[in-house]
Image 1 (cartoon, rainbow over the protein chains, first blue to last red):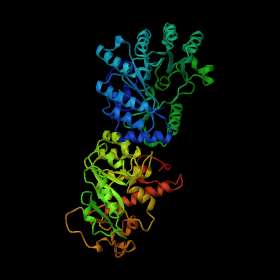
Image 2 (cartoon, one colour; image 1 turned 90 degrees about the vertical axis):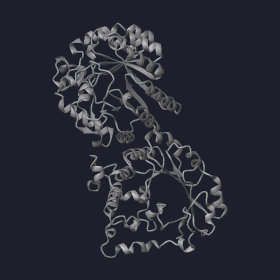
Image 3 (cartoon, helix red, strand yellow; image 1 turned 45 degrees about the horizontal axis):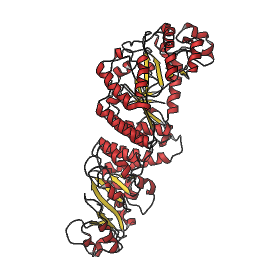
Image 4 (cartoon, rainbow over the protein chains, first blue to last red; image 1 turned 30 degrees about the vertical axis):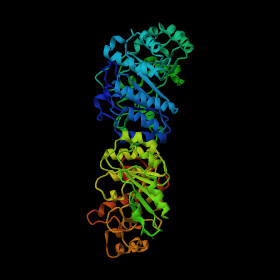
Length: 324
Length: 276
């Protein structure tokens, strides 16, 4: 499902942010109403059932609650990727809209991206906490791994304390292909260290019945068979293959995902349906990605890759001439 | 054709000398709905065609009264509304007998119009907007006719779409200030004699424009406009709007893939033939 950036502004400066390059080069600050109406028309035609707000921080948009309200009045479910660091008034309006529409059977979810408390100023932590308390069972946690000595205890604590959805979405930070100031990311040769580190929390996943959800860009081979077996028992979800997510900017410019945000130049107005957009980006990534290239030299002859089970990590490496 | 009569809801006494076959348009001004005014018309043997009222905003407290009765009502926004007000008011306004007239003063009004229309509210713009400057009316027209997404009918575009080939249809009949269709008794002057309710023959209205080389003779809207919007200073504008309207409608009705039929309004947005 596509993500709609309602603003490119953010309240945080995460060192790993792979939206940074896009944010620096984009024109429009906030999604305008006429464009938002067009997006929902487009979704309706394409039978997209859910509107996903992304940023920057979507909560910065001065009319985020009204846009959320409008989307659900038109029959869409709603999801927001957020830091949760919003002014209290915005949070309360979002909550009011959410409760009203939940009564009418709409689904509202918040995916709250958290950094380790040591990397989060106290004031932001407090506000984020208040948001998570508000989100409760409709909120889940997302954590981006950008160094190998990461710590997840705090995430489990948050899930327990606020009664959040028992899911923990894990993302690997990737480089921005052909652009950007250079974000911090975990290089592929460190991936086994990431999986080894993650193993430390398998018991906590099991104990809390928290389901790990792996974002795209994790190659199968970074896990041992034993780790894969344990993750399977934890009901983990994986996205081993790379495909366009489709992000829509506040000015309706499109790109396949943030790491591939250099593939731009088209807007939503250039297409009649989401299927057309997806096909365009699949073809474009294929055209630009050197045949057979993955994040490791071994990807070339990899059976999993040949069978289409794994894309060989994030395409940003292959497209961006960023070495492992 | 007997013209309809527009009368203030607090002056139904002025209907005394009005021909009984004239339908009544009751204007409540900026006041709330009052059943007594409708009953007075019905008791006097008139049929109530429409109620008119000015509301401050789509979420105005007066809306409920007009929504709760059964006669068609046109609610005119008396000041620029915000999208937020439109969202708050949409559920109350989404009734088949209610229609909200949105004056197009700026981009925000256009957003309000689209938001209401996409949430099931019947909307309208004043017929005279068709000769206004700027692109707002063109955008409103494109949105209403091309219908990229779900939209409720927008007057007068919907009527033109549905009835443009109907000889009896006149766009002026949608405009409460058109004296070919309405006798306006809202002022305090004398009630005119019964002859004032005799409307001109539709089939003869076009004739003066077809003589000589009048600009309206070459207008694609002549069949239903009959020169109603004609003004020497703005004739190019309304003529242009009607041409665009017909282009949009033909593109809508053209078989898929007919590139020639794609109107500039769609091409400008980078769209191909298809839903347009």
